[in-house]
Image (cartoon, rainbow, N blue to C red; front, top):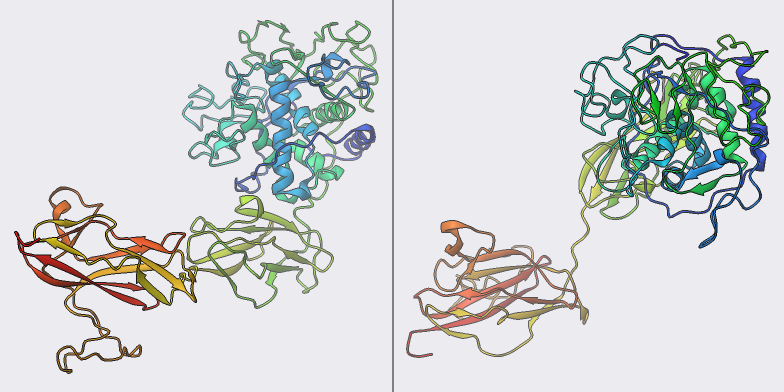
Length: 621
């Protein structure tokens, strides 16, 4: 363990040189094969506290890649039905674990394309944190066959983090332990709240956020690495992301070594057949990452103690342990906590940490740009995009500022990829424009907020409105049959006996809302001041309200229960015409009253139809 929880190491020239050399080895890489992209729907929990590494600063595997590590051309995949590609054993990644890394990178490529997250970076961290989930000891869904637990974070050589999850994730109710193939501490996975409220993610689509599942853990790790508007193709952002996992210069070198190694080529091996690392940095006992008995041997090697090199000869190109010397990436072999090299490389002094690109100096204000109202109809895109300008104290634009646009939980509007939070970097003009916002089905108003990541500048609020879709309209409503509707008192009209069709300009009108009411008279043709039977033209400016009949035919509420099931209902709402413009009314019941009764059907636009219902006395049907 190179850094305690309460202290941050700083990076400087030594680390920068390491990064430059490591990145130089990346040019031989090839882009991974395209995978089916899935939308990332998880919100960005925001920046971590300054002293909270993802893995709690726990010990890690310090094994480094082998010498002469280039995988033969074409060795980064397994031909269908053919043998596994050959190359250094350490270049083989278990199939399910490899799929998890690639799927996570693909999802982040959709959600945050500016991050440029390579799956090989996830593989490098997964190698160092858990040996690729113990060599791929996972089931078909990606869940580890046995828990992978780091040491107790009890302050003895590691961070001191008391239990934050009641032992739910790590089985320890005294102290936290890093858990799963990507070694999240419970407090960073769930942020002290319900499971999944922090960085936790659902990477395999099973509705759960499980740090012991390699798909979930890989996506969560990718989300963290991309947080704060990072661009991982930039060396500073790459360093900053890795050091956020474990703030140690030696850890940074180790991860970068594996990252560069995997960029030169990999191949797939069966689950459970991956090469397990054994040499650890900062291990003081109580570490169960290797999957065996704590502090003892595992089925694949001996847990490395600090200061002892137990690198096995197995898997080495030359059959030797190779404790020191160049490793093909520009780094020095040996890593942290090793010996056996007659000329060991001294541990570098804590270097100086560069300025965080997500916190550009001088951002004191955010200004809303444009007076456009943010409004859209449900199910459509907002025409205007939220836009802000970052400015310094003198009112000058600030470039390179990370601006986070956040949607509230009260709306189902979403950014591309179903994201609720996006981070955009300001340009030279200080402007940051959010991507197109899509309105969901939920109508009403909500407030979108824009904030400068890591700065105290006041947030900018955008009031947005989602309007209901206009109801489909009709200009005519007719029965599909002219058959007289007659039934004996006490009996019922059959379901579907009354069918109507709605049209507009002679064409089918689908989805037209219709209300059915048993009325005492036709309010569109009868006027109490007119002689009986005389019609009066409809006056749309002063329509007469229908009077609901309290006797005769009636409906029943299909959702009622108990004594209310048989209670007469004489008005039905929420009826709509189908795709063919047709509407069939449900079963209509009658009581003991006889005569001619009126059923009024009316659309939302006021187009109405009166249907006569004849109820005869018993024995006259």
